[in-house]
Structure formats: C-alpha cells, structure tokens
Figure 1 (spheres, rainbow, N blue to C red):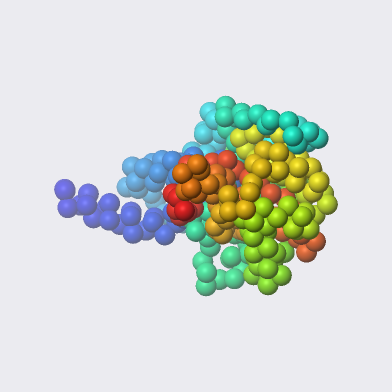
Figure 2 (figure 1 turned 45 degrees about the vertical axis):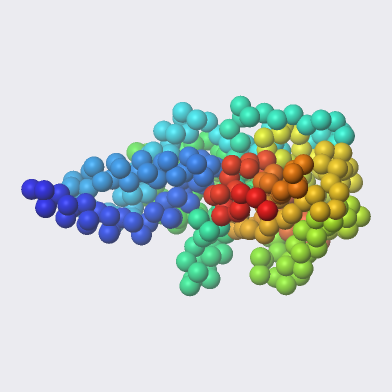
Length: 325
C-alpha cells in the first residue's frame, strides 16, 4: 500500500511539474501579485494531488490543472479584491514638490520577473505571446475587469481555449462566454495603451537608450534624463497614490523627492513583465547602496513613455538582485 502511494506521488509529480511555470503566469495574470500567485499555485497542486486518484483523463492533465487553478484564483479574488496601479485610481498630480503619500493598505499591483515567468527560449513565438500577456499595462488593465470577464479573456485570448471549454469551467453557456469576451475586450482596449508602439527588447536603439537612462540617474544628469523621456511620459510609484504626467513634472519630482547627487544611485538592469527594468539602489549614510525601488519601463521609438517605480525593496530577492552594492 505504501509503495503504491509513493508510486502515485511520483507519477503525479512527473506529470504535473512541467506545467508549474505557466500556471504561475496564469495565477499572476489573474491576481496581479507574485506572492499571491505562488501561494495559489501551491494550493492548486495540493488540490490536484489529493484528487489525482480520481482523475479520469476525460480532459488533458494541463486542462484539468488550469481548471483547478482558475477556481482557486476566483475564490482568492472574492476574498482579496483587485490590485490597481495609482493611475487607475484617480487623476494625476500637478505638484511634484509636495510630499507624496504612501497607502500601504491598498493591495497594489506587483511586477513579475521575466526569469520566473519567462517562456520557452527555444520558441520565439511563445516568447512574444508570453511578453504581451504579462506586460504590466495588460495585467493592470485586467484588474479593472470583473473576475468572470477576466477569466474568459485570459482563457480565450491568451490560452486559446475554445468557448465551450470556458463555458464548462464556469458552468455557463457558450453564448454567455462570447458576450463576456466582447465586453472584456472593449474595456481592455480602453485600459491597455501602447500595445503597438513599444520597442522590442532586442532593439539596439533600446539598449543604447537604457544605458543612457541608467547613466543619467547614476550621474544625477537631470538634463540628460529629460531628453530620454517622452513629453507626455507617465510616472507612478506604488505604494504612493500620486502619479505624474509630463517630462518636466517627472524631473521636478525626482529632484524634489530624491535630490540625487552623482554616485548616490546605482542602477542594476533586470527584466519584468516582458519589459526592461532596473533595480535602483540608493546610497546610505554608511556609503552602501541599498535596495530602493524597482523601475519597469515602457520604451517607444520616441523615448521612455511610462515608468512604474515600485518601492518594494522586499521584492529584490525575487528578481535575483543583490541585497546591497
């Protein structure tokens, strides 16, 4: 009996483990939090393991795991609510010199490291699809959708499930699924701009721009920074409520709130949500640079269009970033 149980455990682990990373990406899209996604994947695998003996194979194991994960996510959304960005909660501020206000009680959206959610490097088409479906603007836009519409859009447009499969999971009709998909697509178009004009991460011009961007911060070159921003650049910084539009206001914000001097800042490149990102380190009084914020950038052919500066030092290890420099 014991050997049979061990064999079943081994069979389940061997069959289910290959889907762990894509299920993590699925739960992240649904919840907008890496921490929550990791917890929910664990819950998914626990439930699947307990029920594995009753799995009859009428659907693929992958589909079965996605059904469990989706139901786990729906329960979590009911309990925890949505995770917004500051730009989804109100109008931009026009007073960069005024102290910003942190709102830690808001469950803010979190960035996701490419190293965790990355697709199969051997399949370029998969890489592009994964990047588009985990972009910060896309995940933020998903947070504005009702939970069931969010499920329908992810399963139909990202995972390419048939309408009948989604209807079965949600215990509804195919017509209801198609209607929910239309509504979700319409709302998503209003909340996920820049889809077509973003520069590919492999573009040489983008790499040069990012090098100049990092150097401008590290040398406190404010004039150089202005040249890299689009005139209508957006800057937001969870967990602070305020967000800003316009290169001139953003630069005033950096000068007023950080007041960096040359060598105060170190920028370590990384990647988040299929986008270029930096771990920004600020020098302490002891001369050590410590984690300060994770910046995720939208870069277009005209410059940096959007910076999401997350004041989440605790997330640096998730990105494989050092604890100090």
